[in-house]
Image (cartoon, rainbow, N blue to C red; front, side, top):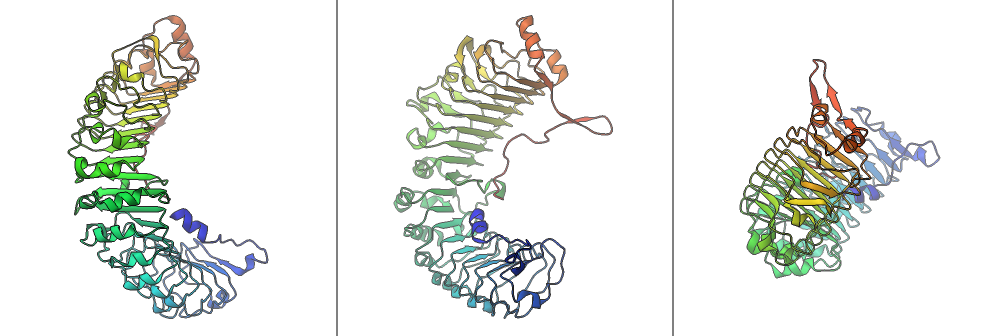
Length: 526
């Protein structure tokens, strides 16, 4: 949605060209008063964003004005009643990040307005008078304080993009008005309290009548997951991306896990979702699964191989009963064949990624595995499963204090290969005493990073099996304690060893370069 806003709001510049002289740009100057109103009259575009303006002129004469940006004036609480009366040609209006509580009646006279951006107007409670904006194509009400959408919104028949995400006070939407917005292409409703209302089911079912919709995000109550109408909607060719979050009634979703950086076919399963009965039906249509704060799920494979066939990314957070991602008994056929990214965070009872022998056709595309703060995991997978990971490129393991080995079982002497593995990161693994038993063929490996792994005394690497290795990074004390198979290995790898980067403070203490795990803890768009 933010890229769309930037595309629709024409660039504002103050270059000294003939065209540039029609622009008024006074941004981030700490202005408390607006520029003289006389300077507004001949301007085509005005930007006064990120100032301290408290008051606006009553009725500026701006008949040529096409773009007005007042974003970030956090002391602006009120817009004069007649402010917009003489702005008939205004097409883009950005009032985001202000403290306005309502829109003035004169906004209904903006018959040419195409984009109205009210993002983060947290005190805004209503959008009355918006029904007159007949040409409006974009309405961004995300993170506002609105409590309801007025019936007159149905008059915005040219609307293509509507953002209601983060509307924590939104309790009322006439369920049938969405059908009137037949040209809608983009509808966002993440983290809207309306999803917990009794009318939300009927409203979301009506969304299925929007034939032009290509992107849809919403919180979905449990009882709607089995809706055949919703499944039919997800099967449409025109629907290119969605982000559905299955929630129980009354559940507040943590905001730091909310917003993806790119579009895709997302499904979030949260604490009170009934995974076995309701969520799995929607899972068949998803490419990205986020599972968090769920206290019943023990494995991902229990959701069924058929339901996981399209999955490309899987991220799991704080699921206290999660023991394995896959167990062989639940993976008789190939499971997760398209999975490319697996991230596991804060799973206190995780034992391993795969329990048992690998199933052919599984994990064949996986590129990145990240596991952080899983206190009881002792190993990731057996040597049998290792043979499935032909596409693995990056392996990152951090803060797993009881892990003793990465791979369980003999890997031989170069018999098993991870041909595409490029980077290994091992941090704060106090009990790790070996990566694997034997030597793997790692022809693409470029970097190994080891931090706070005091029990690791052998790296189980060989010159011939790691021809592309460029750097081994770690602490000097750890490096000096390593044991090598032969002197040639020790001499060769000594030449590419690098002390890890440190920050030194005045009292002589040192701190790790990274204060938090090198992983994505949040999903905020810019």
